[in-house]
Length: 143
Image 1 (cartoon, rainbow, N blue to C red):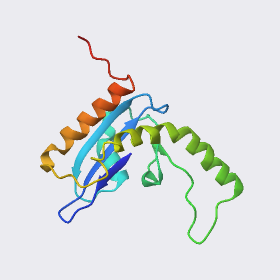
Image 2 (image 1 turned 120 degrees about the horizontal axis):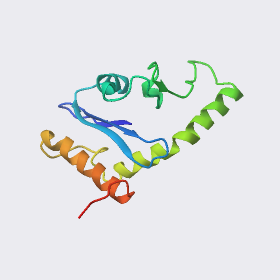
Image 3 (image 1 turned 180 degrees about the vertical axis):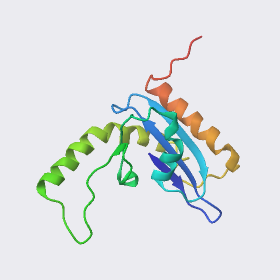
């Protein structure tokens, strides 16, 4: 996932990698400054994973060999029935990831203008990810 907000000063991008069943957040990149495409953000951080690791992403990652994406509708064209069915199957597998992204967006930090010090953005996003992981029981506190 990549999400962020746009302002007059700059944008702040975030990316989250989630297990296919949505059961845990595997990696978070938060607070990347400036306008940056989703695929560029992924390429800058893919060294954290096995080079043969495969991912599923939305059309923002189209063109990356390691990421499977849905079929894009051609300009001034339409998808065939088989292509639409393939996209539906792809979406059915990714729905859990979208639900996990939604659970972060509920906190509204990601989708609205961040009014605190920009240097605190990463800390806030990571704290929200920790809360979400605790809520879905992926984070177990020992005490």
